Image (cartoon, rainbow, N blue to C red; front, side, top):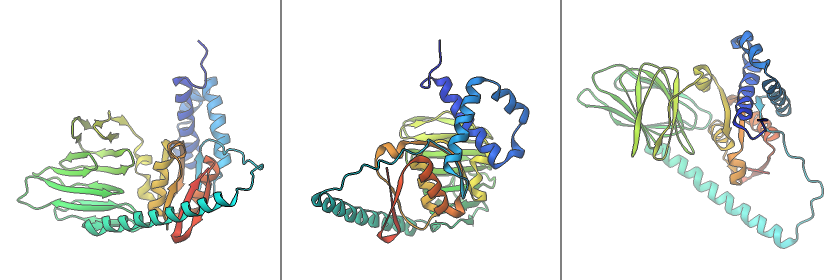
Length: 322
């Protein structure tokens, strides 16, 4: 049977190619050259790697290294919109500014309600009362629910964003509530991130379990991660720990992820609000590696590679459109 671009085999080759391009471009010392040559010897893999390299080149390397779909060609035959349409567009933009302003205020309220919160672009190390440490990513918030020597459980809640936990072993289990996920450990190191469609958990060492309401729990081993969606705890999969926790060193690495998920990470590290227009654009899959310290350059490269425009609105709001 002849494989087409829609077959799972082709999709797997594309995903693997994106990973190789990122690894060879960002950290060539980590690449196993012999393993790469064996993988690249397959014609389908070689073709996928060539396509990934071309896509990477389209995105550019200033501030980001992206392997994404090439941008759509602009239509230079645009017709002038009638005055009524322009007025409607202006009203929609004003409404968008008001809605985004409310959303930004909601972010502030979340931070005020939490025990610990970081501003956009800020990361902070926290030491909890039991001696456990937490690295709170930019634009994140953590609330302490129960903490003390007489407590049967030590409980914290990740209200927003992402955090890395280094838990001190004690007689009481340490529990992190994040969205629908409930992560239960004793003494271990792990990463938790709230995303649009659920929660991502990655275990660096030790042992832990992840559960959710109306879903069977899962046990994680070191080097594994999983995602919790409403009503479902995904199966643990092997992850590259260096890449999964790269945000701690100021870099965000992503493979075949929805554009909305990448934009959310950029927004927490940038100065303003980013708004994606349209479900089609939000769901577009992208792969790459970006420097979080230069979120503006990363967003420009992402726009070029994924084929969207950036409209700057009042109040530091950026509207991302086709």
